[in-house]
Length: 173
View: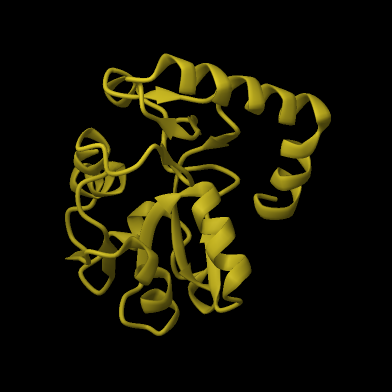
């Protein structure tokens, strides 16, 4: 959010949870996927980590990126597991796959994408997320009404043509 507020980018894409706090500072395109917090784990551990209670044990290492909803979830729900903060969200899945940690708490569809890229990974709890259902969307700058208008027009056209459904089926199923 700090980078967004500093004007360092116009659009944030991928796993951006739509929530009221963010809507007060940014605009969003319409939501494109239902979401919720899940655990990205090694496929070999899917029976071991079948519940949040089985994750939250002293022998488990959770790796997370700082400052977002994943960190807030871990702070609120994890009391016994070891938590390691790593600055690069994109590097954490490989760390889990390599056994440098056991669990990454992330968004459902991020976990699906990461597990498609690396067959050693498994997106646990996608059928029943660890949080209430939320939605993800593209976050855009709110200080340019013309830009917002154009982006919404393009988004709706892509949805009506079926282009968004094709992308959803390819990447998020």
